Length: 146
Image (cartoon, rainbow, N blue to C red):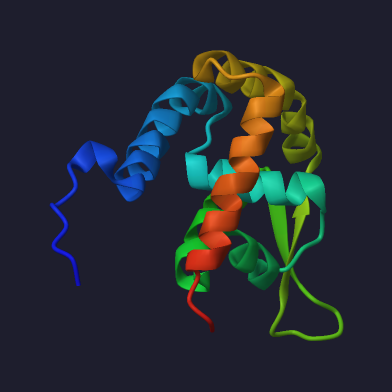
């Protein structure tokens, strides 16, 4: 095996993704503060805006979060009046999440959030879409089999 020099931090894809995540959070924070949401709460709301009535398990799978992490976050959203958590009628072990009118109305802020991120990124909508697909493909390749 050929000796390869150690890469610099700036040459590492993992660091670029990690630091980009922090940069995204800095851009999102003021907007999400106005909505009273943390970034993980925002992601859970995004899931429900796409499809209301999902189970805790479905949202956990989508966000790559364990139920022990997700449940307190969802309880806080419920306390804020943005969603309700109800036991499934056919299986009491399953908890379904439903948006309240306030939670549904919050979806109206999405275009402003998206425009702000697009502007802050300096990218085109097409470029952002291409990069999103590339990063998602990388994530999917890196996932360990269950």
